[in-house]
Length: 268
Image (cartoon, rainbow, N blue to C red):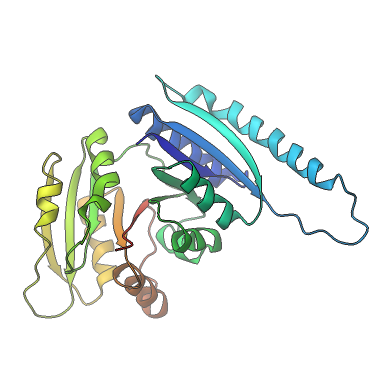
């Protein structure tokens, strides 16, 4: 993990996510790219130099943020910034692709935590537009490392197990335990992809299959019971992750949580 992208709107939530990303970069000796995107809607009579004014103001604010956090950098971790014009979702996604980013770290608002990942328009749009892993940090999450990670999976085979590589790396540098969890709603024998056991061979991990009337509520209860401080899910083409999310929002809003969410993108 060498390149970490952190979008910012200069809010406290974004700055908190940046500090978390720097802690992650310290462990990997990685480079953090702090990105601010702005849109310019020109109107008749608008001064031609307004774009330069907005760009310079953005660059000034980026420098101020970097001054606030540069003391957090350790070892060979580094920090750079960039101001870009355009739609935030498109700009971040394209920048991450162009710079071969390993992960995108974003802040979310309030205690809604995981729910905000989907309801927040920027993060939701980013999850749908990027192929990169996205780590969403709730504003009230105070830790800077993980020691217990829940990987919530469905009963389907993971076609490309390399999708789990960011999770494996994060678990290794944090010396964390990965709890592979499957929540079963119906009375049938559940099977977890055996390939996960092989792929995670060099990190401490175990498997859990539980019964619950709601998958999202089951995951939440498991995390609270075990003290998990990171939830990881795999986003595929309109299945497990979205099914859980839409069910919980329409029925019970069970994804009200305050731990980070790592979304791994499986495009196969």
